[in-house]
Each structure stands twice: as C-alpha cells, then as structure tokens.
Length: 480
Image 1 (tube, rainbow, N blue to C red):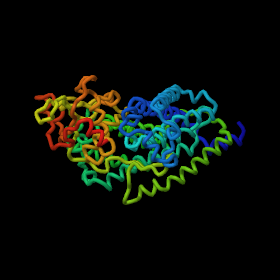
Image 2 (image 1 turned 90 degrees about the vertical axis):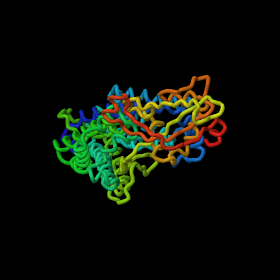
Image 3 (image 1 turned 120 degrees about the vertical axis):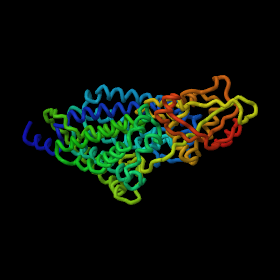
C-alpha cells in the first residue's frame, strides 16, 4: 500500500476495531430476528385486517410523509406476513455473515434491507410499536448500514456516532430519573420497582426481597453508570472499553431482574463497538465513494442530533421521542417515575345467559402479565409480548385502553383464533365462546417468604373495583 493509502486509512478507518464491528453486526442481526419474529407471530390480532388497530384504517388517515411505509402502497395480511418472515430470513443471513461475502456496496444494501423493512412495520404499528426500543433498533440499524464489511476497516466517524448514541441512551435515562421521581434521588426506587415493573421475570420476586441496603446500592450504582460512565466512552482506550464493559454488565443485571423485551439487549449491542478486543486486521483502502457517502450521512446525523441534544439539557426532558419519521436520531429514557402499587386488569368470561356476581366466571391467562397468583413469571425477553405490555399500561390508567380495549373484548367474545394465540390460556373451548366478558381491577403484591412456602403463590391479589361491566358481543362491537 502506498503512503497516500496509508494516510487515508489513518484518518478514516480504525483497523483495531475489526473484531468489535464483527461482534456488533452479528449481535444486531439477532435482535433484528427477534423483532421480525415478534411482528410475524403477533400482527394479525394486533393490527391485521381484523386486528384491534387495523393497518388499513391507519394508513387511510395518516399520510405517507408522516409515517413512511410500504404498506401505504398496499396492505394485506398475506403481504405483511411475507414481509415479516422475509425480515426473519434476512436477519438469519446477516447472522450467518452473508454481508461479509458480498462486495462493499452489496453488504451495505443487505444491511439496508432490514432497516427499511422494520421501518415500514414500526410506522404503521401505532400504539403496539410506541416503545423506545423500536426507535433505538432503527437508529442502530441505520448506522450499521455504513459500518462496512471485510473489504474495509470500520469508519471512525460511524464508531463515534455509535458511542454518541450509547451516551444519549444511558445519560438520558440517568437524567430523566434525577429530574423525575424523588425516589431515585432518595435511592429508594428499587423498594418498589421489581414488584411494579411492566413484566416481571422469573427472578424478579427474589430481586424484590433483597435487603433494602442492597437496593440503595443498586440505585447508586445505576446513577454512576448512567451519569458518569457515559462520558468515559469518549476517552482513550482502555478507558472506553472499561466504560462500555461496565454498561454491559449493568444491562445484564437488568436482564436477570425483569422482562424488558430487547431494550437491554440492544443497549448491549450498541456498547459492543466501543470495546477493543485487541484484534487488528491489516488496513485496507476505503473507496472514495464510500468515504463521501459515510461522511455525508454522518454530517446529516450530527445536524439531526441538535434536538435530541437540546432535550438532554432541557428541564422538560421527554423520553422516547422521535423527531423525524425515519427515526434516525431520537431521545431515550425509562422509568422517570416508579409506581408504588401494582394494579392489574383481569379479564374473565362466562357462558351464563344472565351474568351475575356468582356466575361461573373463568379467567383468561396472559403469557407474561401477572394473572393467577400461583403462576410464576417466565422469561420471554428479548421476545416482545406487545399485548401484555399494553395491559400493564391499562392497569396504570384506563386512558391507555381507549383505542383498542373494546376491540380486544369483542375478539374474546368471538373466540378469535389469532387473539387467543396471544394468550397463555383461554378458559373456553374453540367452538363455545363466552356470552359475556368482564374486566376487574386488582391490586397485586409479591408474597412474603412465609406466604410463598405456605401457598406456593408468588403473588397476592386484592379486588379493587370493576373495570368493565359484563359485556356481550353487540355492546363490545359498538365500543370498538
């Protein structure tokens, strides 16, 4: 290689991060796979043609410029299924390293495919896709397009943008806590969080019963990891590696303590490129067209970062906001406030002709949402149970149920096959739907060690009030 080529490599690429890029790309492809798999297996009941929030109804009222998606051109359940399963196939190809077998431009196009495909899903997903990790996956996925493959060493500017993204994710989450609920400043939030978090995991009961001094230590460590450590991402190695590694360990701790879909996993993925694995491949010249494209995209993303950066320093900081329809640069954050009590909406149905308090009410069981007090939570993350998550929000406030809850009740009254597939168990045979469905609000709390030994139940629940009176099919259709 001539002197000119070596000089170009020195300022544009970082050969010492070759292994960092490889690990990052394969891990990101795995997250993509879970995202597309979640879409493929759940979309019919949530937003299909007969879903609770149908895509055709959405695209009829929302213009393409506000929510760019291929489904503005045409929608059918068959097309969506093919789209999502194709996304799964592309993700598997990326996991297998197909991008490395293609020329540079081909590898970039291959990484662009899942980004375009998932953007089309998120932009018509409505409330089912309103979670911050959807935008985070899209922002990370867009940067991955320009990270290159084996033909070139990783571009320094893209590695920097990934660190800038990780900084915003962690620092934004830290600031929203310090500006939000006072329990974060008092170091007491974890006295409640493990019990009231959206979807507990199999170890959450044990985390809740850790000694309170340890909970305070956890909160203090979280503040350090989110408010101090992110700054060290921009320090020289090995400090940046140590900072990223500490963030990864913190995220793995959160993986053990709850079910947060792929939020923790995508955060870990973003941290991987900052880790120096000590493996360097010989530098290779970056084509001029590649340098121009990468630098132009980087300049655009830096410009778009103005509003998210301003949000970080704002006293009115918001969480999980996208400032453009392509979700290129976003704001993030979680649990600015922590609930002290857990309320759950329990759905029940009956075959009785006239619903009464003493009727044979049978409870629907969700896969991840607490229901039967004796049913121990399971591990689902990074798979995303979208209906279960929205049911947690409904327990916080009925306002979250306005757009889709009536449609859910209607489909339960119909014994809709696609809807019942979202549940762990339906109490009614496929050929005998309930005549009435009702919903009740319960207060849930973890049992004590003694109660667990005596009853085998991890939850204790207390009836609070009626949430939805007994409803038959005609009334549910009107409400939907």
